[in-house]
Each structure stands twice: as C-alpha cells, then as structure tokens.
Length: 118
Image 1 (tube, rainbow, N blue to C red):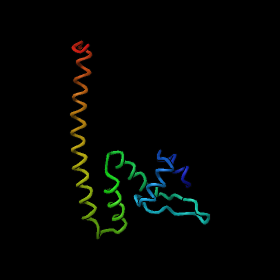
Image 2: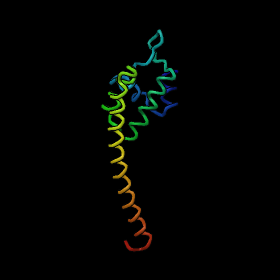
Image 3: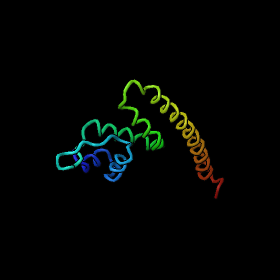
Image 4: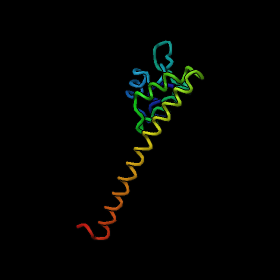
C-alpha cells in the first residue's frame, strides 16, 4: 500500500506519516525497488497506535522511547511498562482537569437556560 492509501485509511496526512518516520516514531517503512513506501499491516498498526496515543496527549518523546524499545522484545518489557504507567498517570490527571472544565461548562449552560445569565 502506498503512502496516499495509508494516509486515507488512517486519516493521517502523508506529511505527518513522513515526519513520524523521520523522527523514529514509527519504524522505517519498507520501500519498493523504486523507493516508494510500501506499507505493510505492521506499519499501519504502528501508525494507528501512535495516532491514538498522540490524540490522547501522549508526548512524542515518550512514544519514541516506547517504539524504540518495543522491537527489542522481552528484555525491554519493564521499561515499556514504566513508560505506559507514567503516561497513564499523566492522562488521568488531564482527564480530571477536562471533567472539571466540562462540569463548569455544563453549569454555565444551565445558568443561561434558566435565565440566570443574560
């Protein structure tokens, strides 16, 4: 699958895919004899993983660390788990902040509906 098809399938721009590959966020993509990227299922899975966690606010640095360790297998299991646990803690804090903001917004909307704010 070429980069255009991968981009459309994953809803990620081709420029973003190239950037992720350049900075080591995803492993190098297999190339055809003519040098065109030829995405395999594992490449798409890696991009989908990165897309999901970037959307959730996981840092590029943490993802690079994780994705660098992942292919090394069992010997990096604890290091990978540590990265995931740290990111989970950060995500839980962001979720609490978002919930507090949503609650406040809901209160403001209710006040408008009840005519308390003009």
